[in-house]
Length: 121
Image (tube, rainbow, N blue to C red; front, top):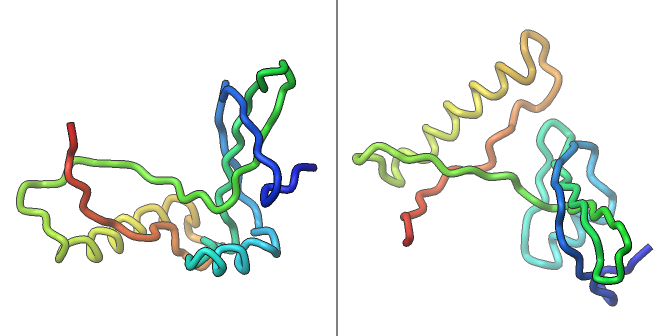
């Protein structure tokens, strides 16, 4: 096992996927040291799996905790920061409907936040 506080690793990433599970016990204190809030969604957190190969030819898989999945969409021209909370709430409601269905299986919080990012070229 590699101690990430003292040892680095370099590898060529070949594939990526993710899974969800309850957070590791050390993640909330670690996030707090970095000045961040470690939030769970329905008691679960996303964990990225990065598959790759080191320069020496060893196969590796890295389980990346503390990653927030994100995506970009094109907003309407009149969309402003005043609309972000309402959009996040509406999007969260739709995701909760699909994930939770008629049974309430989580805290229903799936969308962490919405922010405006301006396109850069």
